[in-house]
Length: 59
Image (cartoon, rainbow, N blue to C red; front, side, top):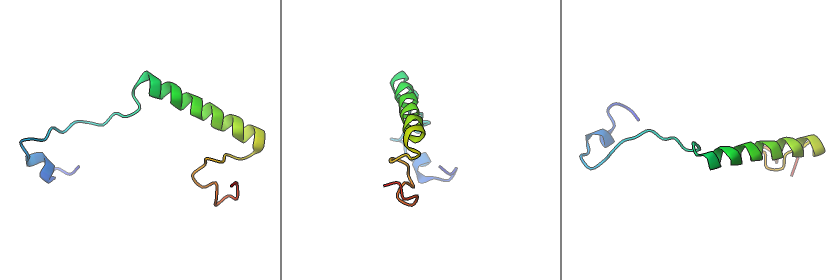
C-alpha cells in the first residue's frame, strides 16, 4: 500500500500486516504438501499439480 493510499485516511479502517500461513496447522500442511510433491516427482518424473504442468505436457 502506498503512503498516499486513501485507506490510510479513513477513521473506520485499521491497517495491519498480513501473516497467512503462520499457524502450526498451516506449517505442517505445507511440509506435507512439499513432501508429497517431491515423492510424486521422484516416482513419476512429473508433478500433475504444477502451475505449468500443461505447458510441460504433464497433464
